Amino acid sequence: NAGVTQTPKFQVLKTGQSMTLQCAQDMNHEYMSWYRQDPGMGLRLIHYSVGAGITDQGEVPNGYNVSRSTTEDFPLRLLSAAPSQTSVYFCASSRGGPTNEKLFFGSGTQLSVL
Amino acid sequence: DQQVKQNSPSLSVQEGRISILNCDYTNSMFDYFLWYKKYPAEGPTFLISISSIKDKNEDGRFTVFLNKSAKHLSLHIVPSQPGDSAVYFCAASVPNFGNEKLTFGTGTRLTIIP
Image 1 (cartoon, chains in turn cyan, yellow):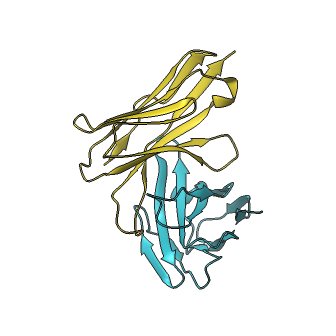
Image 2: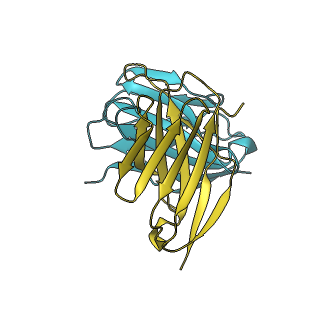
């Protein structure tokens, strides 16, 4: 049982480059979300989705795009990478909303933007 | 504007003693509170939660206390074990029929001293 799978685990980008962080879950969860973790800032919500075809913004959405064409996949796109986007990114999913259903997290993607 | 605050970045406790991790919040609309635990190089995992209609919830060695009037919650771990060494995040949400956003605190690194 794979759970939530994130790829890649590590990535180095140059300023201005674009890339997509992949997230897939095999638990048939409706709710999926992306967080970034920065020192002294905790986990901050970037975007989330309550089902295929539905996405919404979190606390820090600027510079990121998401789409949800299937229940399983929720990719996060960096449009033009900036050093401020250096962070550890976590994808998480839950059966329903994260209040009543626990979130399952992937193991993270460490991104450095030079 | 940090709506969920963990004012102690780190805490060291002797094995076998009680660990108390604290969390304060400012948004009076928060109605559900959760604790997540994170080991290095892994994603966070759900630990325990509490609804605002309760003031205490227990699960084995872990107990969460909620004081709504003080906008304060705490996690008690008794007895503390070396495997409890991790970063602990508290989180809060406003229930919204599954369309919710979790707001996380900045985390407290707990070290259990053998």
